[in-house]
Image 1 (cartoon, rainbow over the protein chains, first blue to last red):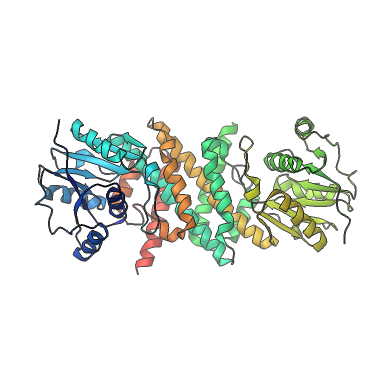
Image 2: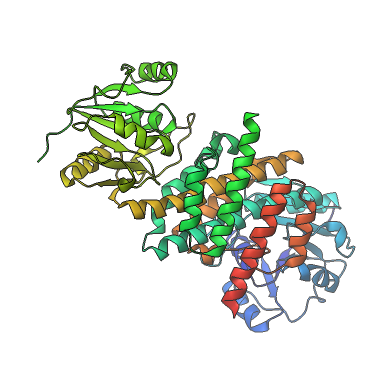
Length: 259
Length: 259
């Protein structure tokens, strides 16, 4: 057995830091400090969490769990600054455990969600993917995640990596389609909200149908005339480009099914 | 004032015909018949709606509203077969009123939704876009739509056309991203359901944030290293292609904001 940690330090001051810090604090965890590269940001963030901004990471001790919420490129450097006896968890989907400096207590605490500053998240449904080489520490991270969410899973670095790629597709890319659709409608003085019931149903269908069964529209029908007219009507080059590519790929995908 | 219709004939046997016919029947409307090119399909569909399959459209009369739910390319031909004194509404987003044969009572009854056969839809939230040259008939279609949905709007052909394009983007294209994400996860023996909370949150955000404010992920951070590694890991050519294009467009979109 390992000695459990007493308190948590949040490393980073961005969106993940904000949401995790907040929910951990609300759950009664002791947040003993926050650290960020930009000291004015960390002061502000520390105030929100009723804690102090730390000036360095190399004074952390064995009683602390440092949760690293910085960008992927900075994780390695941050990990190397933290003393060996401190427990460390990082929150990235794409960085593999093996790619980081070796530490006795290093693990992954990855919330599979897209966090925005001005939007509360129902944390209890967020899948947490947990991994650590030390199995006692892995269990400790599983337990901590379970205080935040009822959807906690072990996943190795490769699995987490594959899942992160699909998360980028269904969130980042989908949201960019919303952005372009919104601009297209605004350009014609039409209200994006008219699309909300359709957008919700697109997601609802996933509960009962495979995405392949749920596909509808001109491209799946191979309705080239409608597609070409739509493309001509679209004014933004980016929207035109995506409209062409999706129509081509969807038409091909479902022609295949008929053969 | 025009004489109100007594009964409804559904023209077409596909997904829109199925859902509209069903909801109109449940709402107590008299469905006096259905017509489809494939007589065995129309027999089956007629049975479901407790009505008869019609062998032709040219015997319809002034008491009937024919709701046309056939593919865009067939609407003109169907309209021309229906007698002039019969009321006609069609359900397409892209076909403009002016592109169809002139008829005294011709209108649009467009449900802005993606219908699948094996998935019930909450019709009361579906936006219906209504248009007719004859204003009395337009009001009649507004009233009929209001028996199905609380979200009924007048929209001219051009507005409906613009909206349909954006609907294709947020439904058809988004669903295709789900399809590719599902395949990517299945290939690695991972369960697509892990993405559902993220997918739901992506949509929930639209209630409080503009899509531009909700954008997160490696491309908006300009994290080229993560993007390139993701692209290398993806095995399907179509997924690779879309991953590249979206990453390029999103990176460009948000670089613009910083200037």
